[in-house]
Amino acid sequence: MEKYLVSVIIENKPYINDPEGETILKDLIAKGGYNTVKAVRTAKMLNITIEARDRKDAEDSVKKLCDELRIYNPVVSNCRVESVNVAEARN
Image (tube, rainbow, N blue to C red):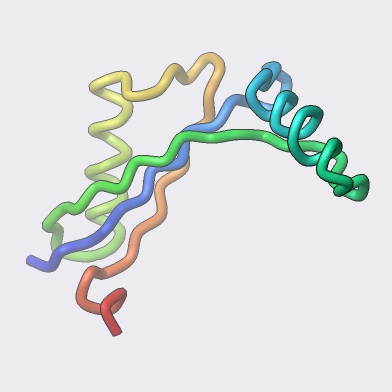
């Protein structure tokens, strides 16, 4: 078994308002003079270290964990998982 670092990105679905992103855009970015930025969406990220046979197994296990434990609300949020082998990440 190898160790994998699995990133879980949870973000609101595109049709759901993102007040935090809107505030960042309006009160920080636009006021800072970055007028070319037209939209900001925020997300939460969890980094989970897990032992698994391979990358797919690591991602599948974490996705299952997130679904079963209701780490996110599938009605309003999308959940994406991405992983790297911990040994590879050190190089």
